[in-house]
Length: 108
Image 1: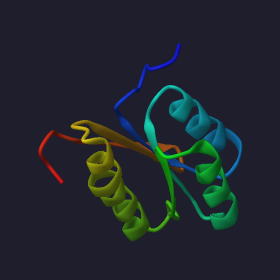
Image 2: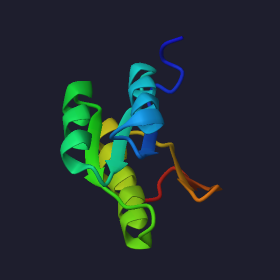
Image 3: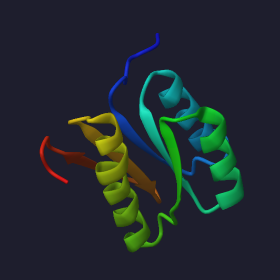
């Protein structure tokens, strides 16, 4: 089952532990570039380093809209550019609501 998200950029919130960490590891194993976000900076950075060159860590408190906007901007501008990718999907989950952000090719 490898390569299912190869060439995609994935933003994972809560990536420093639990389900978020497992999701980040799975997406990386499946070929995605992964932006790990969390408020546990030391742990998040360590996981990003363990994963490798297609991963980055960024501090993000999903309760703070500027942090979320920065995470999406970082994914679009840094990770997509690094991969020369044309597709990005970011999902943010907060208090039971899901916000999906699709950025079309050529934007960002």
